[in-house]
Length: 337
Image: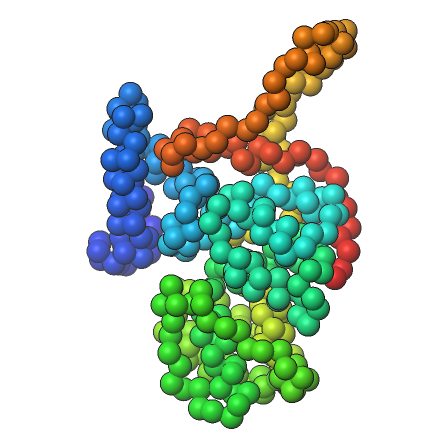
């Protein structure tokens, strides 16, 4: 049965809104680049598995950044994959630096830009040094806002700069997806940090901006709610308010609530299924000792994780990265930075 949204839109608008053409082009490119490997499976099976992976959100694994950020669905999928793969960092209570979080991001997207990670870290650290430690949950929710709403936040930064300098912010240039990666954020000068801008005037400018960013900005009502309790605010204070807002996190739909961040029953069940044979093997009397004590054991070559040779292969091994979590259900209180 078709959804009310589908019935209300013409075909071309619905396809454009869902970025179907983007996925069709990508599927055809993969088909052509890997036609020798795919020929043994069949084209029909390839397209079936490709769009199944799109629906499951595993299609962005190990892909180039230009594809990862290409659609809202891709961004949500990447956020969810990052959370599911590395939630054990939060479970263990580990605190990492910005560079360490960037290394984790590059495990999923090798060319992920450092600048985006730095911007996300700045939301958490504010005026602290960039090499300070951050908890997983603090970084994750800040990264979610920065990554998903990147172009919107670049325009917000321009509005904030204009208000801070007394200029008229009504003529804001909306950046393209590529130009947004190079725009500088407002400098955290002493005047800007202590005074900020008037919250009501700031929201009026943001409301006009949201009309132009219909598909890449937080719901205006929730933005207004996030600003309702302050008279003045700084740019990074605004970003922190967005990252901590429960309603904005729910509207985006990529991550669970903070209280449920370390719980993933579906993943835990999958890990239990995958690891059960190894647990049973370990319980065989004398098996482990006989293997480790044998002279041949010291001569065995060390195992290295296989490299992904083409974008086609992750479609067959889409659960491999998710399966790196240990599946523990123990919660650990995270330190506040």
